[in-house]
Length: 288
Image 1: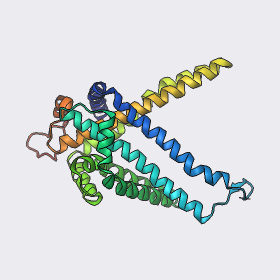
Image 2: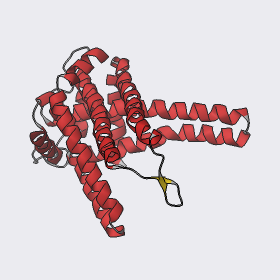
Image 3: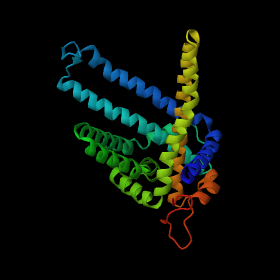
Image 4: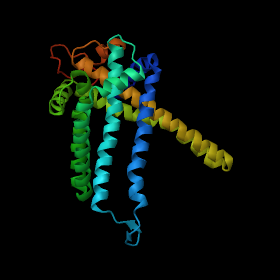
């Protein structure tokens, strides 16, 4: 529980940074809009041309061109997500350096790193597809192993985007650098991912309660409740996405020995090494 409570504390610090630049929530919004638009533009031609069916479930038979389109779509969607995350990291980093970021400056910052973002999108999408393909073909034990590998990959690459944006290095070096920083901050990294997942669950509970009450009431109340619930879930996910990006930036800056602005007090307390240990020692509050 110490790790979870510490992450909630750090999320509070993330919230203070976000309050200073509320417009940064627009970056996850733009990411969502772009994702939907691209998904529709890529999938609609496949769906509309899918006239041949096979099997009892009326499944669509895909051709070679369709698989190419789907592969390009997958990489494009990964690029969109990473691009707007990079824009958010750029803005958070600017704020922590004492600047006053805007949505425009964030997007311009990400555009300046497209040559770094695109290769990472390709690598990230490829790894995801490979792991998923192996998992679908593996047995129960194999799925557990692949799940562990996927978790390890997500932990080790947690700081790749801040490294790409701030240090402006290639993908291979960025993964190595992220891995090095992970060794220094593994406790914070794990606690952050678990903690933000828990925050997402807690944020979803009110929406679930509203929807459940609406269904129990029935009629027009159910429609209104569903709309409110979905709206709340969408809003909460967008805010959490922004907070996660800010946290990533702060963790990167702390691990790199840089000033973290509004995070100084929280990070200094949460991530200070034990006495007699080096910087890579297990941080207080995360030692179990």
